[in-house]
Image 1 (cartoon, one colour):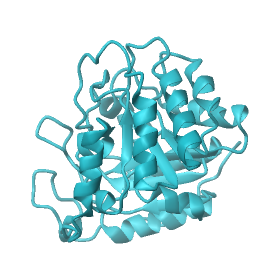
Image 2 (cartoon, one colour):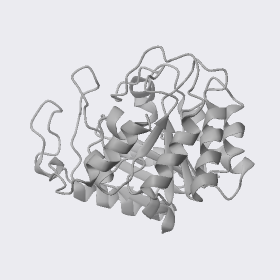
Image 3 (spheres, rainbow, N blue to C red):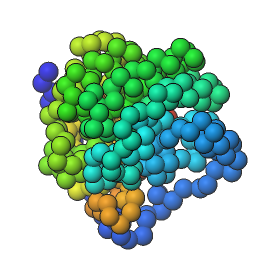
Image 4 (cartoon, rainbow, N blue to C red):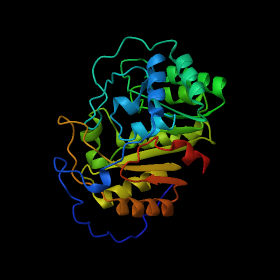
Length: 304
């Protein structure tokens, strides 16, 4: 499906928007700490049930806000990733040999006790497993739905080393299938590692609806890694050409010294403008802002 980019003039860059990643954070990236202590309940429950979240492992800036609202993005298949992505704080190395067989039931228990109506499940990348963890994803989705009746969103790896994995995941019929593009083609392997493939990402998202046409597809990008405006708009057009429904755009924040530096801090008003352009392109829902992450307010996006 061909898609033509809208003609939009690039705005002038506001003062301070091109600060180095090692400099002081601009004012719009400073957040108040939630006053509620409910986040301790969420954290305690996750510890009790031995569950991982991307909130903790990826050092998400929204962790306390989400925990205080009794929600989290569950991370299955362990806490050790086989991919050396240049942006992600999740520990990389050699994972345990096999997934924990009772994890789907523990995940369902947590979802029920938190009262979740929409459950987001992501994972580390497991290139060491023959199916990339696809069967474990399927079991987790089924367990959560049977226990809670909640809608389920999966945020999967690319499964580039197991072409059959997508079909296995889709057997569980998640309401939303999310796989993040993360960045533009020129920066793809620098950001996501040598095994990543921009065209495979687009093909993965396109194929979802071949298995279940009613599935909502979703993808997201981090801004501030050195992409140009033209490159970003072309990447968004590629996502629409793959019939992606939902889009998230957020600011990349360097989680530590050994990770890729921030090239630019994108101001909130530019996120607003990009969101409007994306809606004109045909995305059904768009979430864009400095603190937006792929699963941030995911339930609200689906309900809209």
